[in-house]
Length: 429
Figure: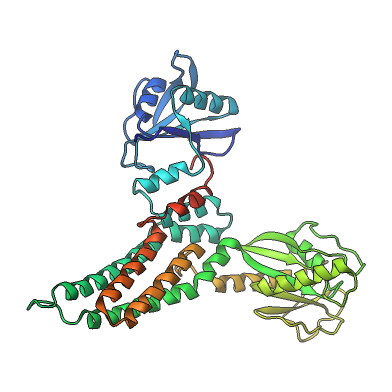
């Protein structure tokens, strides 16, 4: 079945200095001929006048033509770089529709790239992350995922499973032959053990990359009037939370996203921890404790002039003394600061960045949660294969383990995943 030729605005919404309209499909050349008079040379930017079929001029801009399969989608593809007014864009896409082309759906260009073998699913996910990256570390992580390194790791693991399975099946098929290999189980068991260790290590470090993608969660906790909301406002550099002298002003969790030295940091202001009788405040305190449990870092705030409270906290906790502009600094705190004067805020900023940096370093495993689930499933099957004495069952476990890895990159049937993955793209990608 011949695919429809699709088009979409691939740049930002107008008005803008330049708008890029992407076209892909078998009728690309026909559409270019109708609107330009001829098809531009392959992979050469050509300044062309873009017209309606009746000859009326629509705009003048640069046009690039990419012949399939050597294009992003793997099929004939073109990009029209035109002036970015709404009127120009609407006129050109209207003419494309009149020529019989169809408006692309979200992620349809990337999906065609996958279907034509130009990208695997891991590279598609990396591309999606790159498009949506808001911080420097998210950009770097997306490149680690989408530029082929992670796919190469998964393909390498799959090839080792295929080799192990081939050796075992050779022993099954040629057991009576003089040139049959020595015991396959002995030959492959050592490498399977190494492979299992590599995959286990990847799973154990997998949460680190997700912290970079989703944000390093920092919960601010402490007694009422310890300065939690003031600190949130000071770090956000705007009035996010209401600050008063009345204890218990904050009832729910307030969240601010910060870009600290390239890391996405999610800062949570929580209700003051104390014994409360008000049902609303009790719920706020429950949520505050839950936020502390889920956080990657907890900032426990205490008025320097007060005795620090003892809370049942797990994970990494920094003891922060507040209101340093009103009281002399005391020992027992990791950092003493004043939200009013800014004293100690740079030190806190650096401490948070260091903790975030410890979570993931460039070059470390960058797999997503979806990948980890399949790696874990594959690991269990490999372990079964190592322990299984019967060669036919050992080979079957390795085949299933390879299929699990293939689901990460899309080499086996993953139809149920495709709609979810590609729906995250914007129109035009």
